[in-house]
Length: 199
Image (cartoon, rainbow, N blue to C red; front, side):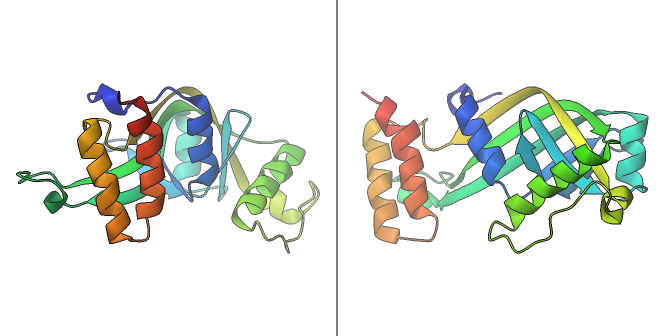
């Protein structure tokens, strides 16, 4: 990672992002161009699970070459250039993002498939009110369930770590004054990863 100040080596923060992100981007090997597709997913016990059809490009590429990468991100506040004096190009986006590398496997065991699909339902329909799948259900048999085993991971959190304490504190005041939808959570992010580490 080129900007080392934004790299965070914290397994709990990585898991937090993977548990909260609404979707991730899977990138697979293909010719002449790599294939990237957004997927709903669930993270469980160091694996990522998602589903799809039992044919098509994603399915065939997983069989052909299991090596893949995966990314997920959460957007925080946009920081406009006028928040900083004499900053003609100071505009930036704050965010948390993860980049993972690993191998794909298409699950064959129907019990494992049903369990993974159940985890997906629990994540995306947290209010419940859905039918719990059994391994004998036709939906399980006709659905491809992919397991992504993480081999390496990196986490990037951009929350003003490149700012000195005075600038970071001033930014927090401007965000409080603006009061936009993501500003409150961004302030917490700045306090956690920037202000608490500044002398």
